[in-house]
Length: 168
Image 1 (cartoon, helix red, strand yellow):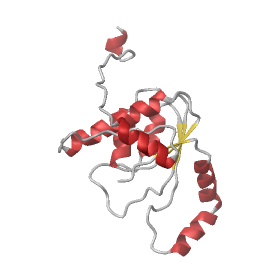
Image 2 (cartoon, helix red, strand yellow):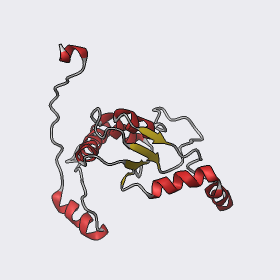
Image 3 (spheres, one colour):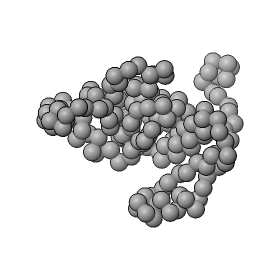
Image 4 (cartoon, one colour):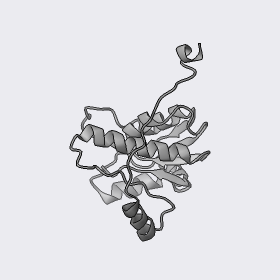
């Protein structure tokens, strides 16, 4: 009954291949606690590669245990990670958006709600950064950073002990 009601779900998630030699070098070079590198193994299908990265990142995040605050960026990869997170992976987590989220053009896939997706999957809350990701003038950035609302979000982001950021 629990399976039929959606309360219990059984799924087999294959382990993603990793590259421990590259991971070790990254850890030493950047003084990281842990690094996960997902090799492409000659795979050319961008969708399959994106899913492999998303699975590995989601598995790593879910394996961290209870983390009260996590910073995230937005984009296709981060959206895929959010969709791969298991339900209640970090119950009650606060997720803060680390970069501006407004696009000039609408993408084919909605990716600017990533922080909300991360939070929703853990029954947590999201704090958004209501500024453009790209600005035309440095003076605009300085002015935005001085705004009390923006400054409070940036301060919260600085406190995040875990950051999940997609570089595009």
